[in-house]
Length: 264
Image (cartoon, rainbow, N blue to C red; front, side, top):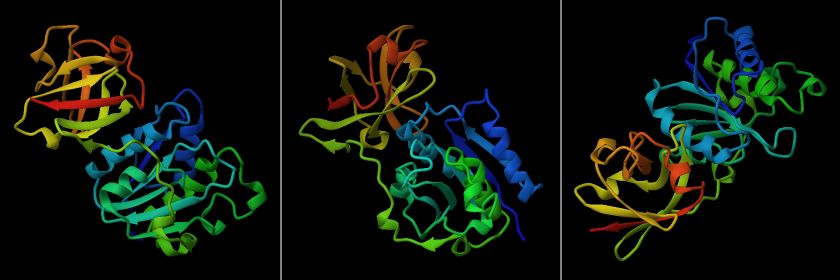
């Protein structure tokens, strides 16, 4: 069978054995499968951050790639384990909103609940850990998918419309610009809004956040070192940054904070 690429995204960090064990579970099924880490430094249990990183990463991989994503505060509970197919490839994840950004961007062809233990690490349900479905369900299912197992064999088909959507404030237009929120804060403290950068093409703007107004520019170096700036990041969203600094700390920005853009 043809073998595809697998990516991994999680909040496991790299200090413990969890990521290595997931890769071991994959290798037991497909020793020649190629595995690429997107990130394992999603803040613990932060589904919104996982959603953002996955949504901005998957388009850079070949068609047919299998993406295994595990940010799973509900592990062992009633949330479903799922696999979905879109035009660009496959996703294996908990049904907790982690895939909602991808689905909103690309749409979805098919979805299944992972109810067939034949494709888990063990077919004995009592041997499945209630705290590590990444090892026992998601990684093995991803390996089987990447090795050519059809999606329909992994479990019961479910209505894509039933998948959990992460409830985030939506971007909306105003008389003078746009309203939105901070949807992600990266390693550098850059605070990314949910306002698409293409809304501002050819326009001059300023953004209001945390009771401060910050002018929009094209590059970090358009302002002095230590000065705040708004610009369109490489991900395509409007973000707030500080030249050679940390916008989150300097401006006291938090995930979910409201922002407003004023078109000049």
